[in-house]
Image (cartoon, rainbow, N blue to C red; front, side, top):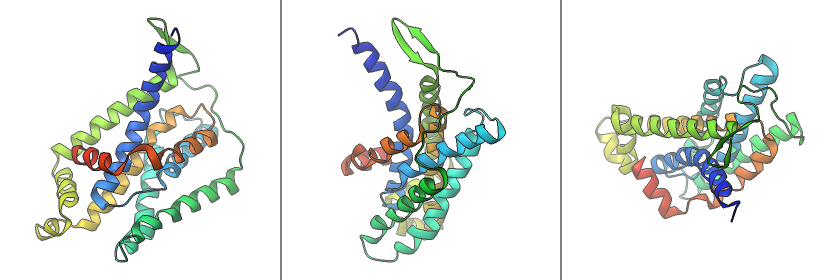
Length: 239
């Protein structure tokens, strides 16, 4: 029982980061009606981008968040344009299975280019120290990632609910044919959903002090069971 508060704190920190990644996943599903099985690999790509921004240019993971967000957003848009958009004209199951293409491609590229060895970042401004709060240790990298995730979810929520483009996203999610009749381009909204969904994974770069390959496997294996179909619909309707 003495370890229960620490376990709860660790779970809350990890859950906050996973929640932002799940928001991107459910946004794609809610708008495009496609489950992105490569979303875990998007996280992997963002973490490698953060690592190489540090190793090549000396950028701290926090400062590299805009770079990782741009890179993963570009990967998301390219995946939609290259794989998903053509499959939307196919059978009902085609858009679902086609996302295995980016999954296998990104994983294979990473294994060939970077190998299976662990990668970690040393000398981050967050360091490896912890903050003690009522007897519970809160690691600074995980705490910063959790706070950044909450800020990211707030920004996405504001964008969807308070902007015209966000309203267009919601209209496309509710009825793409009716949205098209109102002058909304569904294909642009689909691409935007993939951009936002990819960029939402950038918060994971803040946890890059851990082994990237290990985290990639953990996340990639998580999303298949993270949100059942009914929960996805409810979350996406709120986002």
